[in-house]
Length: 90
Image 1 (cartoon, one colour):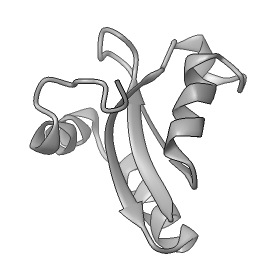
Image 2 (cartoon, one colour; image 1 turned 45 degrees about the horizontal axis):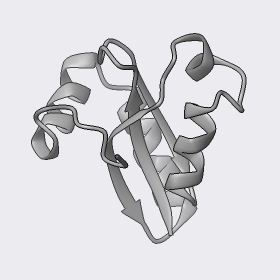
Image 3 (cartoon, helix red, strand yellow; image 1 turned 120 degrees about the horizontal axis):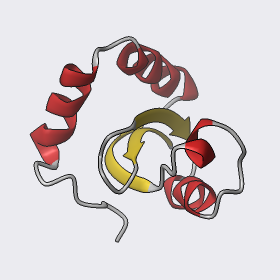
């Protein structure tokens, strides 16, 4: 299984889209700043949306599509399943 996900910071001001084959591990890595880059710089550690896929190709395609969207469309996607921007792993 593969996942496309959106994570954010505590104020929900930054949205990060990514893919993984282990959602819990990946958010753990973000939360503990184990991967340098964007998510460390902007303190992204809260999972607010995800979708599961059978193939890596499908997950990557979804990620690329979401990354091309404007913020308001990403927010609408998140709110469609998570209107309060709750952390879906906690």
